[in-house]
Length: 425
Ligand SMILES: Cc1cc2nc3c(=O)[nH]c(=O)nc-3n(C[C@H](O)[C@H](O)[C@H](O)COP(=O)(O)OP(=O)(O)OC[C@H]3O[C@@H](n4cnc5c(N)ncnc54)[C@H](O)[C@@H]3O)c2cc1C
Image (cartoon, rainbow, N blue to C red; front, top):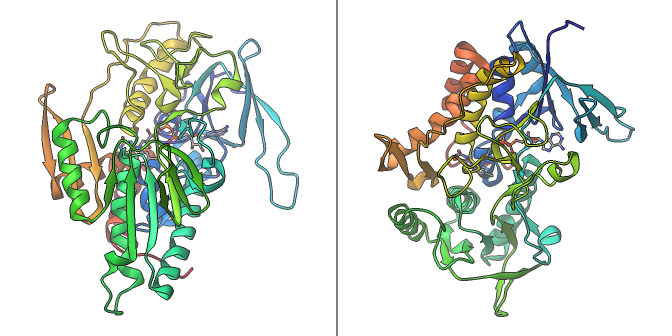
């Protein structure tokens, strides 16, 4: 043991891995990152991996490699329990196909940070688990992609359109729909058929308007983009059941679907309720104070999609976005050493830089913070560049200026971006 305080970070997603990369090389801390997967995939591009507009293998970063580069230890496994009194986290696995996998083990901590993310809830809707695809992690994107390819090949062979119903008109559902339009031509090129006849996409939203909660200007821009892309939308459609061959609305109307995608809402990772006696909000996220500390124990902090922080005077907790998780990672990188030294850091202040939706080749639309108070509506290339800059910043934080720059350049050159779909290998 080095005698340095042990900082344990649970979850190496958009927020957790950035925090580990920021503090891993400090010589006054011993940092360990835990994740169930061996490699990191940046979640905001999950819909692009699902659609096949980019290739996940080019974008994955091995935690083992990052750990070596950024000075932290990586422990792969499933977080099972936290014992705040003994300051121990219980891990199991990873499981090994055809074998027992790694033995359960305990990791000690002086300071713990929970960044285990969130998931799409089914709100008790029948059939979601069995028949719908949710986009929560890499395996979901792979599953969708395999089913999409099969549906498109069947459409090509039969001449009957593939039908996709996406439940939920938030960013995930909308972006996925737009990206699917980008890849469909790859299945039909040279056959003289109008590709859009071969892929029918419907976005069903339970609320009376598309993108509930979004500003009207943004909603209008998205609505007209979707119309240009011939993506059908249905509002006020409460879905009561997902069946193998489609979705059923509460009023009994059936919408046939080869693939149903459930993209309605986000709650905290269900494991959070089992780990320890945390105070959870109504979405199952750990309630934290202005220094991102849990009520259970000030030595346990939480952030990103796993945490619920409501700034003073605000009516609702901060949004579950990578933008917010990344700012909180920056904050914690400075706050953790102070907390360990018994000092009180300044509170976390969220700087809302607006939101952006990338609608594939149709361009991006969004609103970015401008002069703090006003929002500026941006479209097309500029919005697309702003969207990508969030990921560029992430790559830069993880890989540093040299490797980060090379990765960004390689990504830019990559033939896997744009409207291509890999059908072989
Ligand atoms: C399709 C899509 C598009 C999005 N686009 C945007 C966007 O454009 N801009 C934006 O700001 N945000 C976007 N978001 C939201 C953004 O991805 C999340 O807010 C962000 O990833 C949250 O970061 P996090 O670190 O809290 O959690 P996550 O990134 O979800 O990471 C959680 C990590 O915990 C690990 N984990 C979970 N449970 C366990 C366990 N029991 N044991 C061990 N490890 C575990 C997971 O493997 C994962 O690595 C998008 C989300 C989706 C799904």
